[in-house]
Image 1 (cartoon, rainbow, N blue to C red):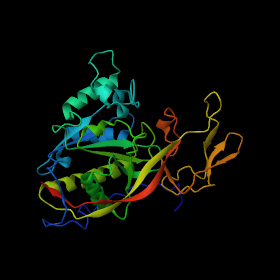
Image 2: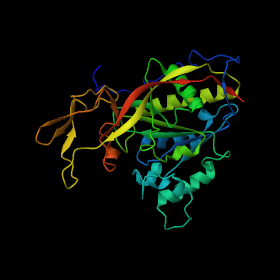
Image 3: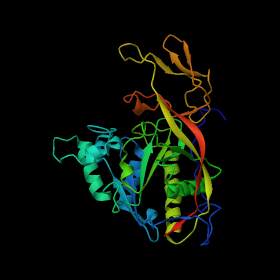
Image 4: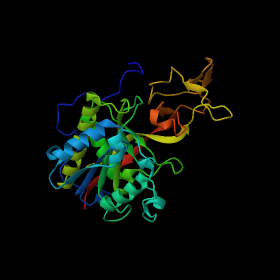
Length: 336
């Protein structure tokens, strides 16, 4: 299968859960968590990422599909002005706006719209870092990169989320859903979902900005279905045994080559374009200058690039991120 082959979930018709979950039993050193009774699904954090916008608007009208026993699930459009304009944001990126400085800033109309919105969202679903914060927030995103279905994990120590992601991966197999771990202290950012006790990002692509593709829409919908099933099972007393989860740990951001004035002078090389998650080895082509010269990757070892040539990241001076493949061990979990 070539890199350009679209890495997207096919429609899953078997809606039963995955193998490997057990009824209540006893594991040594099980991690105990309170029931995840309050769950939110965010769409429109970026107003031109249409799968999440459309699904959340659908569920706002009729939430039956996302309700589960012992769970209250709230669909929510996070950036309505950006959704109305079908643009990523109005004043500043909402998915970078949930910093302590922004959330504690004095309220006022002089603040950027997204900072005002972040404060409002924090009041509804937080406060961030408090016992009153929502248990789980799913934040739905699209990417123009050829990433397929990707779950985003913010902490390698969040065993609840690791178990959930393992459950989802098994439920949709043989289709693929990879896990991106973004916890590097210099690279992670203050996401809208970060106000929850267990924040979960979901990226599905490739999909152009402002466009709705049926296969991407259905892939996102199926993943949310299994995620909510996991929460319901956990709340009902299912114990989940220890497991391992393969993750791609974000280690570096790579910018486009630029001249002395900051202008881009090269493109993603055709051998790398659309090859998200494929190994990039020392000496492999990485960029191609406008006059046809190849710039090779000079790193010390094999890495796995993703978010390759993401349209929204030109403004952030990012051509792609480099990840390293690791395996995390999740402890057994059960409700407290």
